[in-house]
Length: 396
Ligand code: ATP
Ligand code: MN
Ligand code: MN
Image 1 (tube, rainbow, N blue to C red):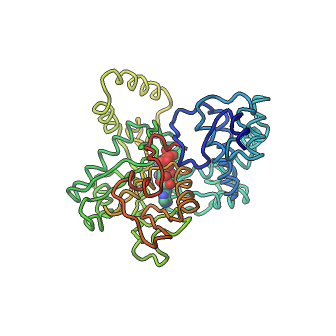
Image 2 (image 1 turned 45 degrees about the vertical axis):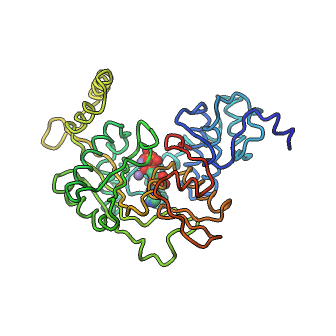
Image 3 (image 1 turned 120 degrees about the horizontal axis):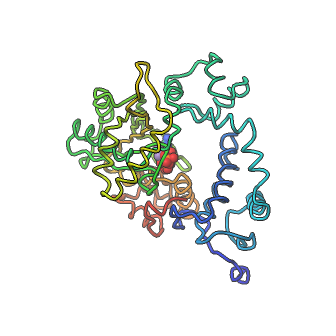
């Protein structure tokens, strides 16, 4: 055992929540390959395999250097035979035949295109593929009935495929802030998800809303949504009410990653002026040239035009809003900051190593038979016997 440890090139703990994973990934070729196989597994209803590939990718993301030989990986956790074979293929042959085959396969390409539509999950995509639908065009021609979310997803497909920038996230933050304080003065909003972890782009923008006085947040979401709707900011929204209090099975059900907060999945209409506003106030002068150059570059592409003609002056952006009572705020913040694998690993650590159940609502100690309170993320890490990991190092 000890000899084995001494020849190890890198040493990495097996739980992602014990590691500091920044966005500075030294092995993007390997992690992209493993992430693609993870995605393919998840889209094929093989969640176990998906998690295995995600864990393997996350271990490589945590390495301080670029891997050049498989021998450097000796003793590392979470690298199963399958993942190692993929890594060896890439290191020795420059590519993994399995990854290349998957990338080219009609099935994977169709699953990607169809699940790329907001509101379409793996099961629906699978069903459509069985009916011979592989593209957006075929879907439109097929006469399949789409629900409201899917119709909105199809309508804004090109916009929603474009990564959301930090400047756009900040612009939306200003709008959400205005909405929230208009309907409930004193309410607070926090940027969560990937942008809180320091990512420069995202597939959406996530916000957590609370009020320092417990109970004041009740009924807040419908008011925020009405305000946003009345100002013309929403292209689509679906609000789900809080079901936490009605839950019969207790708040911190083990292995549950679906929470019960009042939430809103939406598509925002972000005007170009609003974007510019955020860029000018949020960025120091030297950054402005870069942003100007960037927007010029994107202007070169074909401009979307509306029926009336002329360039469109807005874009669609996916936005998630979550409302939490202040007593659960720290748990909600931790649970919605991600990454998804980091969250999964935190819950696994809590359950397997500490006999505790962690959710986005609470932390339950099964040995003491009681809930452990926390008003900050730091306190939750302490309860879990973990060193505090800041958001920027949760990019597992
Ligand atoms: P991206 O840049 O792609 O948006 P992200 O990390 O922000 O990356 P999201 O899908 O927006 O990814 O999710 C953000 C966080 O919210 C994740 O940590 C995830 O665990 C949590 N989350 C997302 N959807 C739900 C849900 N339905 N219930 C509970 N938590 C969720
Ligand atoms: Mn997100
Ligand atoms: Mn989200």
